[in-house]
Structure formats: structure tokens, C-alpha cells
Image (cartoon, rainbow, N blue to C red; front, side, top):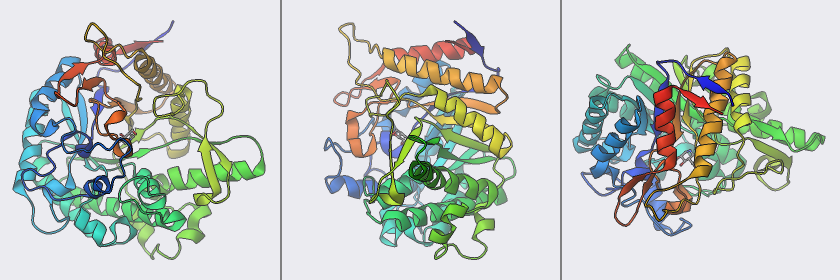
Length: 443
Ligand code: IFM
């Protein structure tokens, strides 16, 4: 057994996103978003919707109480763009901002640092109707929305994340149609969506920096180490291509103002002169989401001729994702080596399992406890080896609407009964509370 300790000022908590937990989709002037449309089109596997989800919109005081009781000192949540600007552009909806105003006051009163993310996938439908992330019409509205939110909240919220996982939006939303808005636009659609999110992010970062100088500005990217399945040249090349798309377009765009050389030709028709300078920004804090590594091989007919899976793993989550805590350690060490060790925090890490309520009324989610222990351990090991990690926020506080999978996949450390909306802290919740109390994890 070994014990890894964490500094006193380490950030501990969880992340959530507006669409996945709030419900109240037609309340207080909220406008429609792409996920409302996608859900109505019958694209959700278990045919559930996010209409109620966890009803966090009304039950947030209870949820903040749960965070406080677990000893959290940080909470990353997202703000719903369609609540604040129902048409995506134009008039602000004060009632939408009122909700986040109350939430932020409640989070602060609980002694928790609110970390706000501006875009966790709920693109206002009117902006999608204008081409969404395929074009530039979204960029200025995003910066305007960022300004409007900051004008109301930045006196109290100091940590601002622009986007969450732009690569997932681009690949699954615009490339292969598995997420909203459901387009099958292939490689070019993916790269366009990535580039325009990068531009919107750059514009919003500059807008917030111009408003106030006391903010910690950043974004959230899910980085996944891409490895070739074997040493066949075509598989090595496939891994390099996918690394360029998945990791480097968002990361090198932001940190270096660079389009990955491997993709320069494919992106040249829509990258305009001066764009590189616009997408680069010296952020203060990067949120890294980590779930697993990706193992790649060549497969013709798929975007970028790449297939990913993982043949080299013996443990899987209920999502079918491999359990690879070493991948998190490797990722942090590689990031330190390649990007000069800037401040990062784990903005999401967690697992869905097929949780059941036991006869004693509790949820004994031993697999999730092991998952969290091993991944927090990987973070601790990377820190002991010099990585500049400031915090660990698990995904997620509550079971929630897992996008195209609906309510069936449960990621929460707190169970939500979707009939009664009763919250039940799982064993993993108590485990995290113990880690926070001890400022240490034992492996
Ligand atoms: O639920 C999602 C979240 O919205 C973004 N990151 C991955 C999570 C699990 O799929």
C-alpha cells in the first residue's frame, strides 16, 4: 500500500453541465437548443429526454448541500447559452441570468469556488439554423454572450472556462451525426467545427479579459493519448492523424496558434489569414478531461481512415470504455514535457457503471470507487513527478442525461431516482469525501 498526499489548496469537487442536469427546458424564457431538436427527432437510445433530468433548476440548494457535506471546495458547472440569450444573439433574458446568480451565491455561501463553463454543447437552435459551428456566424454571438454572463457574475465567479470538449462537438455532432445537431459531414465538417470553436473561444477569452483583469481564464479539452494498435506503418499513421484531429487542433490552436501540419492542407479552404493569432491565447488554467486512452488502427471509409478501440484492456466501464488510470499519468507527463508545465486541473474523470440500489437502500458502487481511487492516484503520481496539477473534479456529481444514451448511463457519485428525483449518495461519494478529508489517497 502507498499513500499519496495532496496540497492544502488543491481543488476538489465535481463537474456538471446545464443540459444534463437542469431540466426546466421551457421555463423562464429559455430558448431552444440543438439537443432539444435532436431529442425530438428520436435520436436518444433509451428514448428519454432531458426535460426534467435531475431538476437541478429547482433542486440546486439540495445539490449544493451535498457538495458542501462532501467537503468540496470547487464546483464546475456550465451556463446554458439558450437560457441567457434565447435566440443565440440579440436580447438577453434576465431570468436566465437570475438562475445562475442564485446558484453562484449558494455555491459561494457553501464555501465552494464556482468555476463556470460557457459552452457545454447546448448551442441555441437559431444559431445552428445559421450554420452552427460550420461557419463564422457563431463567433461574435458567443463573445457577446460571454460578456453578458460576465457582466452579471464575474464580480463573484473568478474562474471561467470557455468550451467543454470541442473535439466531441465537432466529431460526434458534425462528423458522424451521433450527437446534436446530427450532421454527417465527415472530415471537413469535423475540422470546420473545430476551427470555428477555436475562433469563438479566442474571441470570448479576449472579451472577458477586456472586461476585467481579475479572472482566471481557460477552457476544457478532453485529451486522450492516441496509440497505434501495433507497429504497422498504416496503424502508426492512423494514430498520428487522430491525435492531430482529437488533441492537437484544440490544444495547439490555443496554446501555440498552430494548425497541425498534418491537417494544414485539409483546413486551408477555411482558415483565413490572421486566424492563427486569433485562436492563440495565453490562458491561466487548462481543464483536462480524461476517460481513457485510444488505440488506433487504419480502417478505410471512416473519417480520417481511423478506427479506435482497445484490445489491450481487461476492465471496461458500462460505456464500454477501457479503464486505464496509467493513461492519465502518461497524459499529464506528456503534457508537462510538451507544453512547458502550465497549470492544469482535471475537469472531468469518472465512469458509468450499472449501479443498483442495495436492500439497505445504499448504492455500493465498488467499481466506481476503484476507478476513482486509481485515477486520483495517477494524478498524485504525476504531481509527485512534477506536473503542475491544481485540482481534481470528478464527472459527475449526479447521475444525469448522458446525451445520446439518455438517462440509462449513470456517471454520478450521487444516484438520482428519475421517478422521485430523490438523491442518494453512493459509496463513491463517501470515498471522495474521505479523500478530501485526508487530503490523501491510499492505493
Ligand atoms: O457526460 C459527458 C460530458 O458531458 C462530457 N464529457 C464526457 C462525459 C461522459 O460521457
